[in-house]
Image 1: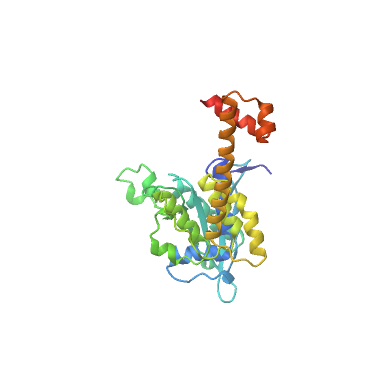
Image 2: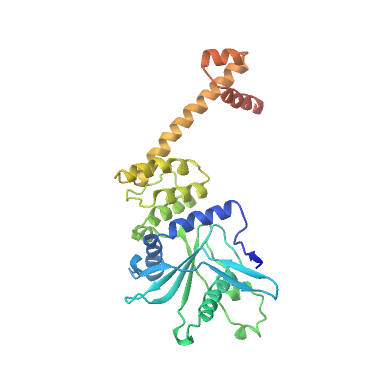
Length: 305
């Protein structure tokens, strides 16, 4: 069977960011926390009352080719008797996509179609809700409904069915909303808001981080700062030994790495000065105990001058 994969935002970095956010949101505590605060405004979803739903759906666009759609995250909501009563999905965007209403409409339609394929009676079809999380530094002001992206003549507008999407701008959440989160998403939301307003006085969250590596992988990709990812394993090791890890620990590790990096950069600048003043590479190795790699970096600095 030939399957065509419908990619969301292209390849490379976009796909990595999608994967990082999906890995964190896939945890039941984080998933429930996001929706309880942003959508329901109360503690409605409980981790023990959700389970993973199908994120892939395959449909036939023509007689020959099958196509596959992939959601980011989909959970099935269960009632007290553990019966599936609804499906709720999260879609993550690192940039605003104008065709999003059509994409969400396709996702939701595929979920309903899947139920019909399973011979679920019409009166027992389960509702599907999809929430979009916008992680960009811009508000999602337009393209929130099908009508907003179609060029519809006024005479036809009353007869064209609309499809609206639910979008939350993570970087624009107010402080009260961010403080209401009880999962690792509080630190994530705080990070995106601080990044947007470019606040140098970043206030690190003292609350405990549960999913340490997943949070740091996400911050690393969106900040283009690999230090977050690199400090993850050591902090995870401390956590496994019973240590309580917070963003304050992350800040200290980042500062330590910054100091180390600063010392290394100072050493390279000193070596560049030594070579520019007539010192030989052999003397640099003997007197300064430098490596070939450091000499190459110093030469790079001299070439830029």
